[in-house]
Length: 253
Ligand code: G3P
Ligand code: CA
Image (tube, rainbow, N blue to C red; front, side, top):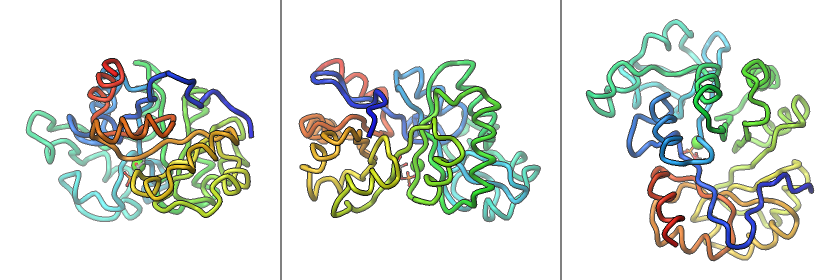
């Protein structure tokens, strides 16, 4: 497998990925959360993407809008006009009232203007056509060299690879595969992205993957004790709700 520059050189700091933006400091997956993450020094901003009823990709984590907006209902059952009308900031605090659920196009356009790369999670099962729409938007926003795609869904990664072989791919896993290198080869992965708990069951998998040229990105880790353990284990990147703190920890350690 090719090393596309995502393997951490010896002694280099952990790559910092802001989970749903700087989601400990601002309402997750909004433009402001991404900007806080970027200003805090994160190399990547992680955002979740799923389509509206009329097929427009929006940046939102849950399958419903209930927890993070003033509306209710399944994202896939709401039109883009209905999603555009929602307030996605007030639930986090009154200072964030008026923030919207961004479209993928708006979120990518904002990153292109301000700086910052996206770790784009294709959230939930997607059809090939739905993945094609995501790829089209990445290209229209001229962000193909600044987007890294990840998903729990192998088919979403297979479709992405067919449609846009230039995009690096990461597979999210909540439990470790018996042979993660074989899975990485089958899917053409640039990275294997286990939960911290999953990796804890067999930390030696980090060396197996890296020896095969596959980077390891671990989620979602907010404590300095675990950052130290993961750095020691040799992982490449950490996905965290506290990106500015991890940037500071990198600098101090
Ligand atoms: O980036 C990894 C992490 O985002 C996966 O879990 O539920 O936060 O999307 P979740
Ligand atoms: Ca995610």
